[in-house]
Image (tube, rainbow, N blue to C red; front, side, top):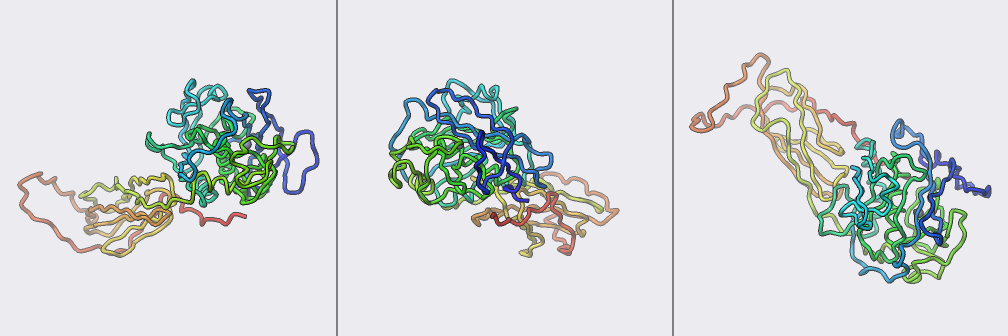
Length: 420
Ligand SMILES: [Zn+2]
């Protein structure tokens, strides 16, 4: 079931929907702080697909976006062409007030909306991966890295808290439309939808507001004020800027940037992001792997099920890694997984020296090895050897047969589905 088929949208007070838009439960707009506020709402409906069962929020709501920040207004862009980072925070945060919207310190001028706290995303690892991959796909043309671990303090990053926002009438919210992205490290919010199409659209629209993008009347664009049945993206076309969910045309606010590419009243979201952040930055950092189980040098007696677990760290955070297990250069197992969490069931007796090889989505490879011994059923466990002075030399046993079972404990990821 596609996201789109479950999404239902309705324009308040209007019945002139085209077939692209589906209807949504009640649209409740957040009251803006400012009388001049331009209503900006993205309405997202929950989708009851298989991925969604029992996960995430079920109430539909608009994304409400307050007006451009006071005194920030129209502006020429930050030094254009410099890459940035989008940090999708699935872990929740205690918000701070009185420090603007600084992502480094979890600051938000909207903290009162959430009683100062956003809970972690309650969904599964595979749901997180699907959301991340959808967001990365939409940003693939730009110098925007999408990470899931907080970047170093000295770097600039936009943070979208993707989690439990508490009872809200909206699906996501940004503090302002930051023309030219003059304030580069903002905090925004998205409610914890479990489907990737819906989740990534909310994340990207809120992040893009903090980069200076406004709403456009273009159902295929991520900046359309409603979630549409289409897979939305940042489109390379001049789209009409709208001031409200009634799709009323407006002259736009961030025209110093918009008019670099379009006539007044229009916005080209693809060109603006490309201008602000430049082309994509290749990922050249390899993941690191640390095997935590079985313990290196450990001895086990059959029958036994040995967990093969470890920590994978990569500068981009969560990814679909290709994880391979090798012995003597022979591949025993390979699968696309989000984590190293396998089990060895009754491996044949012998000495093992396994290498776990982890390849990130860009093909950067990291690996680690672990040695252990499996003894035949009924064998006594050897006495621990003294740390020093042992004189037995090293023991070289026959390599065991390779036909034992190696099972992922997590369900293998589904093949990446084509998005319509
Ligand atoms: Zn919006």
